[in-house]
Image (cartoon, rainbow, N blue to C red; front, top):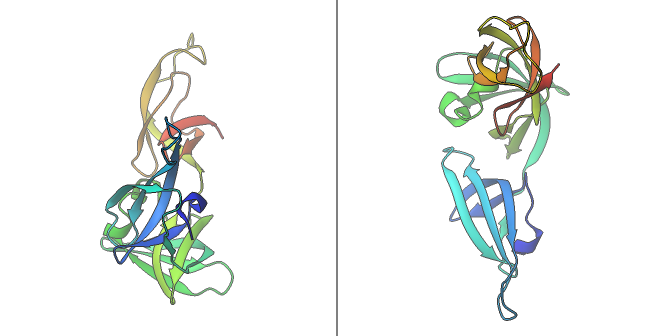
Length: 187
């Protein structure tokens, strides 16, 4: 596989590490003799370490054979998360430090998660692009607040703090972008 075929969500083998690609930026050459560069950002699935590298378009890259399946978070404790396959009810465990980046969005019973599985082992998880969460704590709503005015911090059920418009109150459901960790809209 060549670097110009890279896309988000692909898993590649780089220096004997499984890298999950999160973003691919294409940089066109500024001169005729230059080659197109592909800047890849992602993370090592097993350690969660950030990964960033530039590839030339004709550079050969080794993809990793993984399968994705829909899972539900059954429960979590101090050192691991337990997921269940939605189709065959098989259970997988993932160490808490492997899901550190996603932990702000995980709560018991959460569905719509994709599990990355290779050789029967859970390598990591992918969250949906947006999640609906409830506001548990924020400043009181202002009666004269407009929808595009100022924002205030709000704590969600998972402990994540996001900036929301002033007219929202505790108990309301909102949609949050899981990549940028920003408020999108009311649910």
